[in-house]
Length: 250
Length: 223
Image 1 (cartoon, helix red, strand yellow):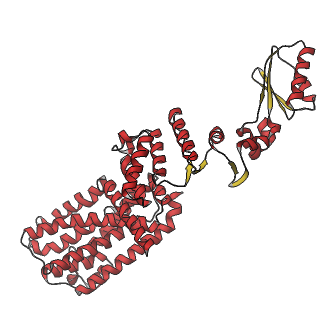
Image 2 (image 1 turned 45 degrees about the vertical axis):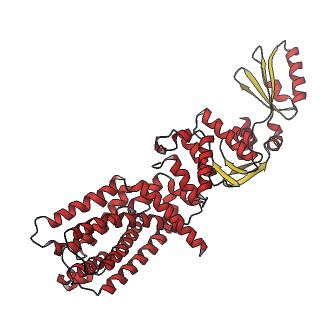
Image 3 (image 1 turned 180 degrees about the vertical axis):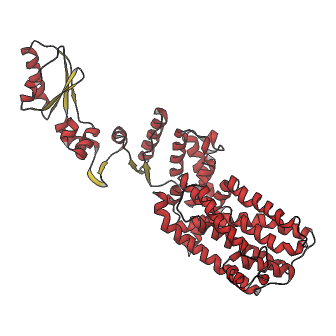
């Protein structure tokens, strides 16, 4: 237990290092700030729908893109600059590094997702339950951060652009099937089935319930599914990174 | 690379669990000792290779380890930086700390190491002090002699005390396990052929010779 606590403290140190290095990197700013901003503008401007209606999709999309913007680039970048080797020479387990990467991605997502939320509150749109919304934001950011680190595990490349591009190939389809643009309850049956495989679906559904009081899944199911996705993504990320580490360092 | 020198030391110190007060002290002392204190807040990517190597050594020392593993610490460095690093490694070793050093530089191994292991294809081919390693290869010692005229080396190779005689520029390099007998022979040879000996040196086998002998065999070294 003591060793676990020590390793977790080291994860925080790694997260602090990632924040200093990666938050200001070009791809992170493009994919984590500029891209969601313009997507959000394209989503809102010119549509004859009340802001309250588009809000769940907007918060879901922004949270998803920001929380997944840091993770895919860290490991390839560290491999290229040989700092991954150096970290592994320290008394840290690989999972400690992976958790550190997830935390830095999570914090970035959480900070940025507060912006649309604050804007919403400033416009006088109130959620039904503010605490549940914050808890939802936390679990969703954790889930998306774990997914982003999983996406950096394969292929074991040392080129950040490759990892970012491949992660975009997974991220974009997920946005389109997740009830961001069309609510899940308005999708045909096959659409609902496809939507159920995306973690973003459950977060968007949760936000819809909190702002519009209508959703497809029960709120508890949204939470539990996000927790299950987070656990599965985190474990898969650790396992896959362990498996590809030798190739990555060779 | 994207962190400052200070941030790099702090990162490694924290990962090793060094208490913050001790970490500050160690980092300050090391940066001062290695001449990097003035640039502690600059990004490492702007450092020269020598500065980066010095910082890497600081990072290796920041948690005050009992054993230090260094992989070619002076590789590619300028003379001044390489000398500074060698001095620091020697001093660290004198503080009763153990240093494992891997290097392709035989002269560096000779200068810095108390014991040397020669590794061939992942296996230790020999392990001993530099002196003992050289003593194991006394058949690799040679005499370098310069005469005032070109000589016919046929007579040298007929001498049973001479393993091999090869030309080396204007000198003749004579490999022997019995230098004193060969020196007497050379003096005798010079008198007989009315030659003058301009220069004569007895050379001990270098660690490089020992290494090559162990890896490739004696003939390869002499050739």
